[in-house]
Image (cartoon, rainbow, N blue to C red; front, side, top):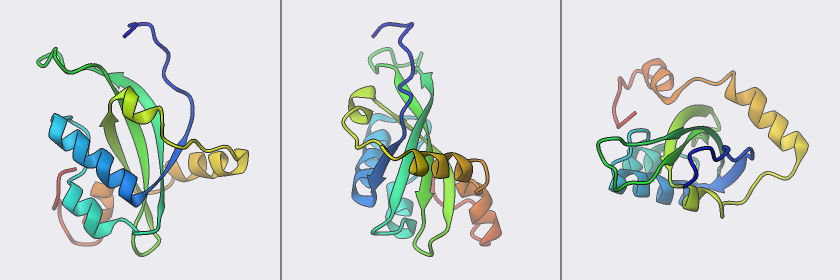
Length: 135
């Protein structure tokens, strides 16, 4: 991969099943930023829409066999309709085919929410759950 490669500048909208697959893949690959797939299954809205935005390139210098990953900001919709943020590392080949947001209004809504909603960790503390699950 070209070290000067630009970050993709598009928001992706995914369903819960797709999010769960991405979290499981990140877990299998041992990526640093991911949620516990069991936590996602228990807390994500089954019919929710979740959003991904690439924030930076990440490399595992101690694992040169793993290519660079995209570290994405994740806006996650929970079962009760609340939204929280997290980070998710993924391979570019897993990010590229995901459906992108094509509506300017939906993209702007994502951007506004990303800056205002709590992180998963903050939400867990507020809900009194401590830090259960991988954050």
